[in-house]
Length: 135
Image 1 (tube, rainbow, N blue to C red):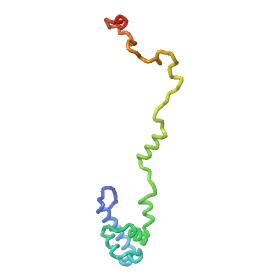
Image 2: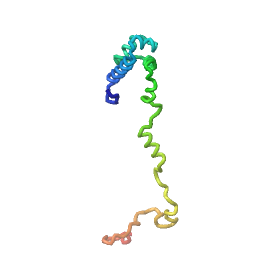
Image 3: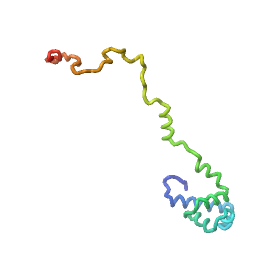
Image 4: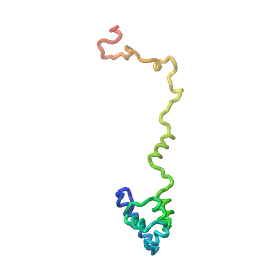
């Protein structure tokens, strides 16, 4: 069985227990022998192999006795790069906006720089009552 996010907690614990028993049997050890090598009780080995809850320190002792600790480094890496973290870092590198070039800005006093006011609209040739006639 492959371990993935779709497994329930109970199914995951059962699979870990099955794998623990498999490694013990490959070494041709009894549960009592594994318990003695790990420094835990035989009942702890039985609970772990049934997929029941055991203390983390007991699991570490069992994994150490079965020489499985190096596999934990691959299973639980020191750090991983999440896609969202990479995206955030890339966005910090790219500019969010441009300030524009001063050469492209209109010169002081030009009509483009002066604020718009009511009555400054361009004349509409189809308007029978142009703005100049209203004043």
